[in-house]
Length: 194
Ligand code: GAR
Image (cartoon, rainbow, N blue to C red; front, top):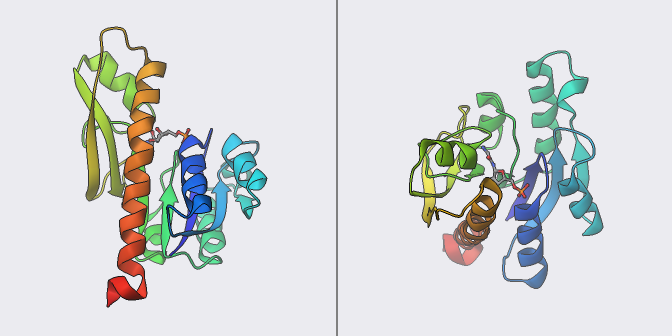
């Protein structure tokens, strides 16, 4: 199963996918890692791992539509079976998602449909919920919307800060993302299709 991973920042979840693919725990080929801006640590991690990388800089395009079309063309050039948004902080169009047969997987650090958006951890804490978590889902053209594939709860402790809570969520998130990719890869293998 060929995947393209999209990042906007640190790429710690991407690193977990790279490590799992390198160790053989996860049977996927990372065809490329792309970002929406220059200078992300995620792209640096991918380069260090010897992976193909690209940047389709959102700020270099006059309109969102032109950026989206450029992103779609570049990702399509790798002919991925699945595209993974791993901390990719941009909404993409329905055309983008349709170009990949709807196979656009996103992870989010909250129990969707609660607390979508760029600050899922902060928003859950601000609301005062006692349990939050993470969600892996097939993304549609909305903000963190689309059919849920996997979810797991994380308890918020009184002593948690946004940072400590996000780290706890990311531990679970990495496990769920890798397990989801593993089961998709198994289903797409000749034996799985068998
Ligand atoms: C992850 O927690 C991911 O769920 C979140 O960004 C973080 C990226 O971390 N995505 C969203 O909030 C999407 N709405 P990373 O760059 O260290 O993998």
